[in-house]
Length: 231
View 1: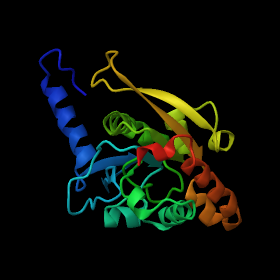
View 2: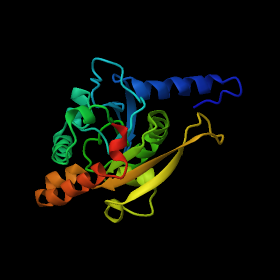
View 3: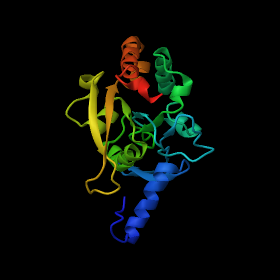
């Protein structure tokens, strides 16, 4: 985001407007290129679980818990709500089994590494698309200031925790990270949070016999030391 230490340029102002729309505007679309084909992609910003993006302003707001997935699917883009597709429903089921109430879940912040869906004709999310959305997730973490982050799958875990290890090696481990709260690249105040990575629920839909392990992974996040302090 533009620095406030000097007068912003026209380019900075345009970028600031673009990023703000991408973070808060549930009706935003943008041209996305994949293998030489340009398409108009609907975007779905992050939001509190109790926010209906179609009827109100979405975007980052301080929350104690932040869930980061891969990207919204077609149903989630249509309904304008993260984690309401088949994988999201399975995830919520595991949360309820672990003792998380709907009231607790409603105060969590839900987002994805990429704010639009996987391009047609491919089964994987292009790394370039993740890179293009990187600054948005960085700003979300800065503005949400979560005490706990749960990364669903390898795309989220690698983006937040680094590429050294995949989600398999990190599953169930609690890691602590500091994130800058500065609006610029200059050093400033930081915020510390605990982060855990688990399997993406979409993997469980493809391999149902892994559900018991997945539910244990979800439960391990729920019982993090100090987790209940945010209530």
